[in-house]
Structure formats: C-alpha cells, structure tokens
Length: 112
Length: 111
Image (cartoon, rainbow over the protein chains, first blue to last red):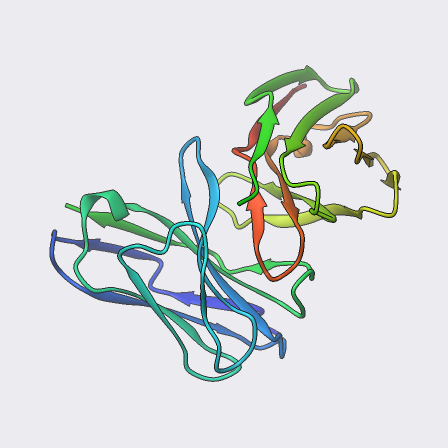
C-alpha cells in the first residue's frame, strides 16, 4: 500500500518553461489536493478535486492548472514557470471533504 | 476565506516539560480543526483533530482544546521527548475540501 505517490521529487526549471507534477493515490479516496509549502507561510491550497471529474480553485491558483485524470490521479501543471513558483509541492488525498489528509512525500521545484 | 494564526513560531522546551501551541481562526463557520506534525524533510502527518461539537480531545500525551466562542484552539504536548521535535501546523475548515493552515511552530525538545 503506497498511499500517495508524487513525481518528480526534485526539478529545476528555467523561467518560462513548463512542467507537470504527477500524483497518484491507491486508497480509493474521493478528494485530492495540491498544496505548496513556503518558509514562514505554512501550507497553501492551490487546487483541489472533490471527486472524479471536478476541480476547484484553492487559495493560490494563479499560474497553475490541474487535471483529475481519474479517481487515482491528479496532476498539477505549470504552463510558464516563474521564480515565485519555487516551492515544495505536496499532493494529498482524503476520503471525504472533512477527512484526514494523507500527503505525498513532496516535490521540490526550483525556478531559475 | 479563513485566516488561521499560529503562535509561537518557534518553541524550545526541556525534555519532560510540556509544550503548548495556540491558534486562532476568523471564520465562525469553521467546524474541523486538525493538527499536523512535519518532521524535517518529511511529509505532514495528522496527529490529532477535533470537531466543533467537542471541547477537548486527548490521545496519550497529546491533547487539543477548542474554544468556539473565542475562536481559538490549542495543542498540548505533555512529557515531551526528543522525537516530538518537529514543525506543527494547526488548520481550520468548514468543509468543502478547503483546509486553511497556520504558518507552523518549530518545536525543539532539548534532551
């Protein structure tokens, strides 16, 4: 039982490049989330998907897009990376809207 | 949206002492308050949570209290151990998948 798996673990991009962070969960959870973690800022919600086929904006969605590919997978895309998007990104899932979040191991992204 | 403030940002205690971390929230409709622990370089993990119909919850050395009138909640760790050293995050939610986190407290337990 792997829980929540996200790739890649590390990535360095140049300003303007694009990339997609992949996330998959094997717990049959309905809800999936993308957070970013910055020093002194805690965890901020970028986008979430309450169920397969739906996605909604969180606290800091600008510059990102998401796709809920199926119940297991939820990807985060940066179309044109900016230095302000340098952060650690965490994918998470939960069984329901008020359920316990299970986090992935994180992806450290640096934009030069 | 919800605004969660967390204090202190850093906390050092001697092993065996108690640690208290406090959070306030702004949205009176929030009804779910979890606490997550994040060890260095690791993912956040839930350690305890409380819902608005309960004023206090305990799990061994960890307890959380909630004051809905004052809109604040606290994490209490008793008999601290070195393995309690980590960053702790409080959070608040009123459902709809939107959990707002505090900025974290770095707890250091000194042996």
